[in-house]
Length: 345
Image 1 (cartoon, rainbow, N blue to C red):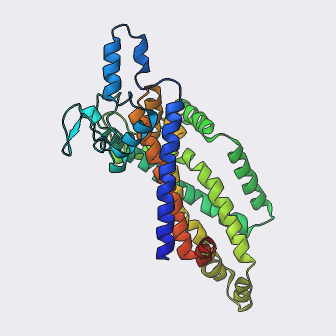
Image 2 (tube, helix red, strand yellow):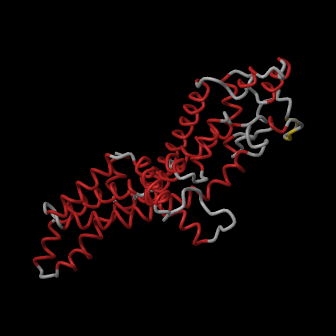
């Protein structure tokens, strides 16, 4: 087991390294650049432009920029900003690299530390991700159980049609319609944001969270209900379930003791990974509901060409996704030893 966890951790590390290389390459290939917008400003001379390019390390080759971004400035023996392990001047060039959680300074937030700007948005994204996960589980699990127990009957068909229709509609578009109807016409929910200005109580924050969490949980309703229906139908056909019924156990006891316990096992092991994936992929919902999280910050950074913030959010999102997959794999290996055997064979 230890060897399996170590091997998967090493694979995830190299996968993360590959993700940083791909992300950095994509941003380099994108049109424009961090300071290209200054080309049209008559107040900026060529000397100023070159000075800024040197300040942010843009005068280096792209491979050198990648290495410096990854490992920091102090590894370079000729770096003018580092001597004897300490930074001498020009704070913007004193990055210690993303491997030491130094993502540099933001271009559009008055030179503040990038990680400091992002840390302010993490609680909002975390709250939305956790709430959508809870609402998704509370809605999706009963639907899956009920559909499995009524297989082939009218409730099963209704639930399947309902989930197919929900899956066919873009969830951000549905959220926009609900926002207009419930918030604009009926005024039952706030029109956006995380709290009312001047309030900020727990009740007020929960009121603002209701609609974004519900819309973000629609994908969970669809996915959880389908997974649980499939798992329950698999378990219901097992011999030990028939044996339990033949012994005279009540249907309720068979369901809770033998069916649900085994059907929920793979479902529960995957929840941790699903939450991390939700946390790293809620850009559209945060934009629709003006939710001040990391997704909305990413869009603002793209519009402002704030490269340090963009790259930092890309790295954090990739890290959360890879960490989620790793946790799911490890949990599965604890639950089902055949997973470990198939991989190490």
